[in-house]
Length: 161
Image 1: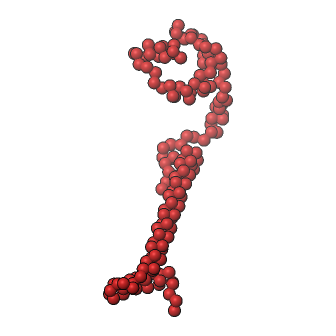
Image 2: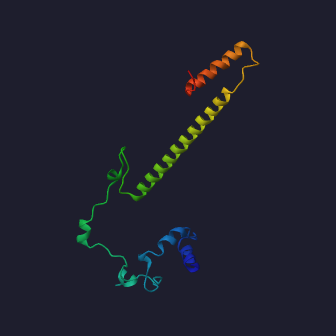
């Protein structure tokens, strides 16, 4: 690796190789698997083809007939999604749609739980208000509290007629 980095730096005007993360992914790709190390620093080797240098490709390739039966690549307009949904043939798109749907469902559930908590707290406060004594209050203040208590009782159908 040190020699390869030095060669790259020398051949590229003293620029260091910065694509090591990409190299880590591609280094095990069949294209780079030469049966024996190949040194082409002496110049082009006349009469030697790709298979002579690297051997047969480990991955099977489509022949001309098979290529013609293969579906054509989609153009940009073919892959553009409509407003009704996403391109379901794309695994990444499917994954992101699922991920988004799960996040949305979790957010909705969290909102519902928060709303239920708020309703419960409000009910507890209202029940606590029902226990408020009007014994030591002025007549007008006692009437206001009595009226509020009646509204709470009506809300929860607590009136005993």
